[in-house]
Amino acid sequence: MVKKKLAVLLSAVMMTSMLAACGNSGSQQETGGSTNDDTSAAEESTEADGESAGAGEESAASGEEVTLKVFDAHAYGLDEYAEMVEAFEKDHPGVTIEVQHAANDSNTLLQSRVNSGDIPDVFDVESGTSAKMYYEYAYDWTDDTDVTSLFNEDALETGRDEDGRIKSLPWTYENMGILYNKDCFEQAGITELPTTIDELEEACKKLEAAGITAFAMPAKESWVLGQLATHFMMDKSLDAEGTANALKSGEKQFADLPNWNNLFKMLDLAIAYGPDKPLEIDWETSENMLANGEAAMIHMGDWCQSTLDSFNADANLGFLPCPVGSSADDCTLLSSCNWTYLVNKDSENLELAKEYLTYILTSEMGQYWMCDGVGAVPGVKTDREVAGKLANDAKTYIADGKTNGWIHTIAPTSYSDVCGPYLQAYMTGDMSAEEVTQGFQEFWTAQ
Image (cartoon, rainbow, N blue to C red):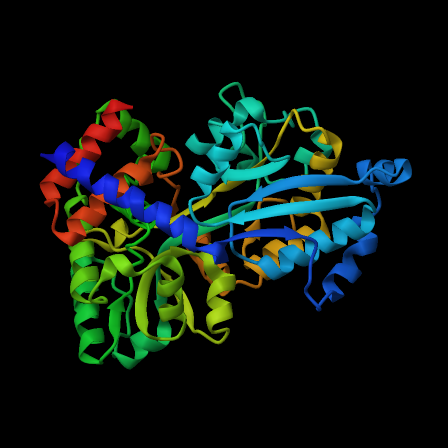
């Protein structure tokens, strides 16, 4: 029954994804240099970041024009990224940085390029399972201690292969849970954050009574639902890796996880107290609704700070650790250095590619992009203040030891692509909770 329903569902999802990929030009952009008029940050960083033009100077001296191909699986901090590219190109005459920003279907787009032999010189993927798929193409940074020593050790660990070699470099620390609009909560008379699934339901009722949409769950995005589910898998005594390994080995069964059934209660709340057609809500729509007070809660992470700011820079937002059980101790805010960057070891411009990656992750201009543009804490060692309100809010939970790691990045390959649609099917009434649970179990133990 599960497989039959899933086959039909996946066909529909794949068709929808293809149509979305064709029609969503806003999230897949080609960038070469910057057209942003505000170049003050770029000008300030020119001296600090231009001490060594390296391969760029060599190309200019020989009269050769060089194009460096970069694949970036983000749509955050794009203005600052463009300034950063402009500054690099200014210091490297003859060099053009060609960037493909691909926030939607990034895995599919990157894999397509790799399969066709068009491997970018620099590219990023989620750390863990996804990154390991590309390590055969990756430059080995292990002996480049002048670069690796610039990063926090825990962040650097996310880029090691099974032999302990450093095959990728970390981007930023990212935190995810429920994002909530504080003003909406205040209007509804909610004075204390809900810490249990029952308290969350009571909060939804108060929000509804105040005429406020409680949830704008971006259920159109299978990856969002896949990430949401990991809160309800987590065994805090094992943390992320231990929980993932126990599920993969069959030591733990989904049906026996203490908080698993509450995932379906959460989805029920999103349906009952959300928009009429939840599967039509994508990530941009949900973030817009949250920032402008049209919805009180979404599930997302602090990586979307710049987009939230673009919708409403004055939005009064914070993190709500995801209530998954009957105790406040069960609440989860998940934190990880999630995205990691690789350099193509066979790049025709290897030294330039290494220099560019080092530049965007460690330089003053790179930190301007990450701390100010994206609003996140970089994986590189830095004392720079982070602009993101959400990242700063998450710091309090991290400091108090109230976070856990990320499961979805170390889950079996294609976890969100396969299991996310199960949860969409539950929300549309095409699969029962039992069928979804069986589907998760079969997927995890078959890997």
